[in-house]
Amino acid sequence: MKTTGNLGLKKPDGTDIVDITDLNGNMDILDTAVKTAQDHAADAVKHITAAERTAWNAKASTSVATTTAAGLMAGADKSKLDSVAQGANNYVHPSTHSPSVIVQDSSNRFVTDAEKTAWNGKANIVTTPQQTTAVTTYFVRVDGNDNNTGLANTAAGAFKTINKAISMIPQVVNHTVTISVAAGTYAEDVIISGTNGAGYVSINGTSASIRSFTAARCNRIVVSGFTATSTTQSAFYAYDGGKCDFTSCIVIASNPNTGISFFNQRGLVEGCTISNRSVAIHVEKGQVTVTNCSGTGNATAILTSAGAIVNTDGTIPSGAITGGNGGVLNPWGDNTKTSRPIGEMHHENVSTSQVVPAMTWTKILFTANINNNKSITDIPNSRFLIPEPGFYSIEARVGAVAGANSLTREILAVHVDGVQNSWIAEQFHGGKGDIQISGSGLYDLYAGQIIELFIYSDVSCSIYTADKTTHFAIVRLA
Image (cartoon, rainbow, N blue to C red; front, top):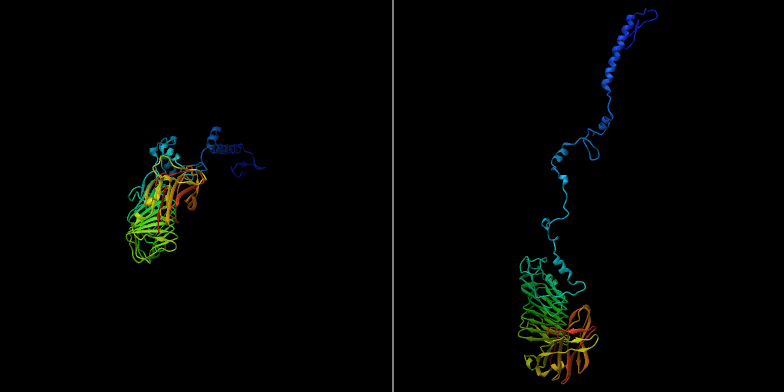
């Protein structure tokens, strides 16, 4: 009898006798096999609910989580989370902060409403000329700093350079501005230019050394106590201004250039030492007094040219004295100034200023005299009456104010016997509120002639009532 290949069930052949026992045995084998198969299927496949399926599908991967995919948390991330304080995510940043929590520094400061109001009330420096408001002193020291205020004589307060101090001076100087320079070497070519007004600038050195000094078109400058060391240019130079004084200054470095030079300028050289120069003092188109100066090794002590006038008193530096090219040097040769025709008038101590109409030649009126040798001054008629023939030097300065930056052009002219003789000064401006115009000239005059001063302005203006700004002088030279 044959059997099946898997369960060994008996299979009767055609000639085999069928035995009921064999059939029952096959059935038992099948029953056992089927039951075993059922048990195995129940273990492998379980029935689940819809809720279980949804919950299991929402679970994270067993991989470590990334910024783009959910997963298990890394240990380092868990440590970070543990360090976060309870409720940290509940912080709300305040909309305002008290000033006490803000740290200020040199580039970030609080300002008050009062400061803002004061600044907003100031004039626009682009359209309004700046001017002094009080007597001021700036300090300069070799241990200073140009970022300081310059208002204290300390390392933390003083400027380091003279030119920085000069840059702080406004164009219009109506008060005394002093620059006090401490002892030391300042490798600077010091330059000041364009100052005007009723005041003046005083630059004082105490054993201070500079390369050179230049004053250009300044109303009034006083320089004292400096040693200039330049070997390539004039040590001290003033031009096209009102009056510039050099006192107690030293020029001794060997140099073919001039020690002290003036061009179209009045000035004073007093107590100075000038040595080793081709020309110690040169004056061109100006009037200068040299008093008690010294120095050696100069080819020429004093040189005058182009109608310049130099008067000396006391000692002068070594070298020749040359009044060349039309210059006049100490023409009287002695101290007989009390016997010379000399007159000075000024416009001061009057209740109202003289008004000059626009584009109209107007005679300047004077109120008092300072010198009146040989009755040359006629104050009631604001004129000079020439007492004797000779060559006369005439010098004048006039201060004018119009306001609103409207002054554009002014001219000073000398009239002889009621007729305009010459212009001695002319100024053009881009628009100023006040100016000072000055000039001088040399005249061959005769006894009995009348000298008067006239001014012309493009706009109406008033004359300053102060001698330092409005003055008319005459002196016979020869």
